Image (cartoon, rainbow, N blue to C red):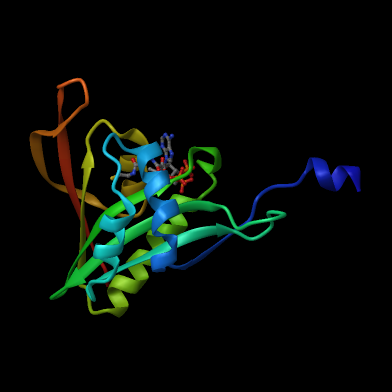
Length: 164
Ligand SMILES: CC(C)(COP(=O)(O)OP(=O)(O)OC[C@H]1O[C@@H](n2cnc3c(N)ncnc32)[C@H](O)[C@@H]1OP(=O)(O)O)[C@@H](O)C(=O)NCCC(=O)NCCS
């Protein structure tokens, strides 16, 4: 029994995003990005027919279903894009980013998407590593695209992959 306790680890399921998730997503977004998106921004996006998303919810927590991460995506006229992706730092490097992205890729293809695009800061090693592993390749570069809170500018990579 004590051994079970010591080896306890969180398990997650990936489920479609709902409007009720927006407030927690906003909080997590604020922890992982310099500019937080508020829950109204998430709600407005999610109410658009072309927009969809998935959340990772812990299945073996005692009193609640903590949010492990989320991905928000859009598909229109055969072209899909990742709008945002974040995983709670405390659950990092456990495959949640990979699983969320797989769910978004599958749903985008089901909706008729032929390719998926995204933008990522070139210096974001974790995200660039994840996207490369998923088969994304660099198709463009936007120098000085992102503005840091300290006024510095950084390069964005545009990456894409086919969905079929
Ligand atoms: C990027 C992010 C979503 C990755 O989520 P994650 O659940 O930790 O990633 P995974 O466990 O699924 O990792 C999958 C692969 O991504 C890469 N990766 C993830 N974290 C990494 C890190 N810290 N350093 C280097 N590569 C990393 C690896 O290739 C990894 O595969 P491996 O573990 O077999 O080596 C997460 O770090 C995050 O939320 N970052 C802040 C927000 C952000 O940058 N979002 C993307 C904006 S475009």
